[in-house]
Length: 164
Image 1: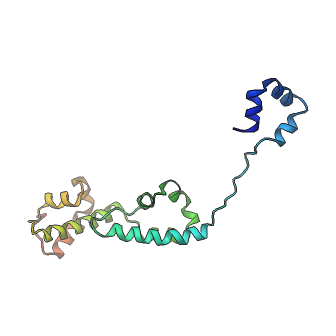
Image 2 (image 1 turned 45 degrees about the horizontal axis):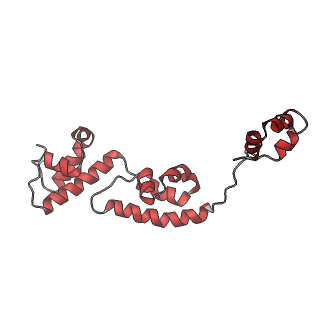
């Protein structure tokens, strides 16, 4: 609670007299200012520390079942999602690294489908369109945007009859 609020709540008459008369200067000089907050964070040091963690997280997002690499997903993995994306200009090393690894939704879906093809091959499953999309977790309505690229992936792996 600010000093002014304490005075106002406990001694309302005194506060009014001070506020209306000569005590106004005293109130202003003894109240908390709402000025700029001093930034005590060493952003260069924090940038270097976070870069190592971000590189490890991006690497883990590419291994196993692929995860979509975005600022908010990396920040969530770090547990600092609230301020991480908002301060990207203060983290130039992290920004450069993440911007080079961030992927569009189409790129992510292709990477997920490529992973699903490998998984289905490993499980000795017959690859059908439904199994592939289900394993990859890609909704059918997204297929229109990446149809030709998926056909290219399947053709490269010699699965020509999946999409007809």
